[in-house]
Image (cartoon, rainbow, N blue to C red; front, side):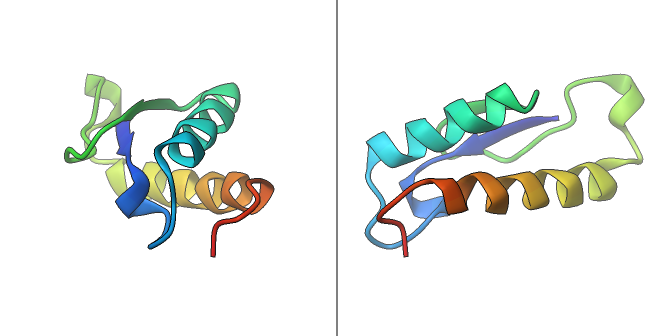
Length: 73
């Protein structure tokens, strides 16, 4: 799936730099992530019908990577 992240997704006081760092960390974990505000979408036919489980796995990695970035509350 293709995921999009911007400051609004990670916290009220988050900066673009923090969003970009989070994207970098998620990409290192193998996720297809870009900066921006768009709807997350299935990027491959094999993902159709599995969106919920993919989003759950992404949410887990998102929170893990978010905990590695300082200054986000």
